[in-house]
Length: 212
Ligand code: FES
Image 1 (cartoon, rainbow, N blue to C red):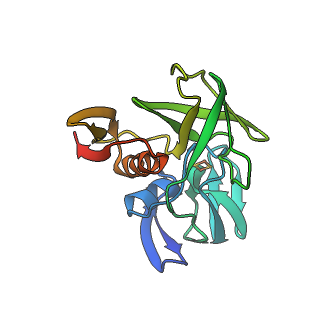
Image 2: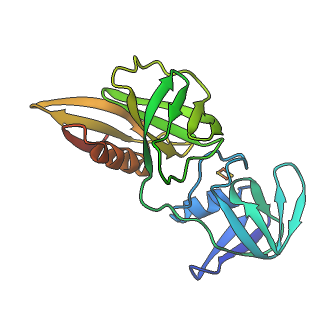
Image 3: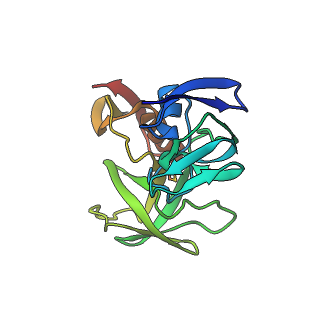
C-alpha cells in the first residue's frame, strides 16, 4: 500500500495517507470536521478544490488538478494538495410544516434548503426519525420514506446529518423531573446538532447528551 501525502493548504496540515481509504476518511481520522452527508458523491457537501496531484474516483475515473472533487469518493493517486475543504459550522435546522407523511414544506422567506441526497433527522416531540431527502421541489422537501409519526402538531424540525451517524452517545430530554431518551447510539457531532436543534425549536425541557 503506497504511502502518500495529503496537504491541506488552508490549514497547513500535512497527513500521511494511503490509497485504499478515501480522502474524507483520512480527514475525519485527523479530526477535521468535514461537512458531509451522503458519502457517495451525490450531495456535494464534501466538495473541495484539488490544487495539485491526481485522484481516482470510485467509478475509476482519474481527475487531475485543478478540479473540484468530492472527498468521499476520491482516492489519492499521487501526493496531493487540496483547499477549500468545507468544515462543519453551526448546526442548521429547518422548521417545516408537514404537507403529508412524505413531504415537508419550508417556511416562506430566504432559506438555504437542504440538498437532494442528504441524510436527515426529523425531530418530533417524543423522538427522532432518520430519513433521506429524495427531492427538493420549491419549498417542498420530499422524503425517501413516509414518516411513521402521527403528524400531531403539523410542524417538525429537520436537520441534515452524516450517513454514518452511529456512535456511543444518546440524546435525552429532561422535563418535569422525568428523563426520556430521544435518540440512542449516535456519534457526538450528530448529538450536538440534534441537541441544538431541539433547544432552538422551543420545545420545553432540557436536552442532555450522555454516553451509552
Ligand atoms: S458528496 Fe461527499 S458526502 Fe455527499
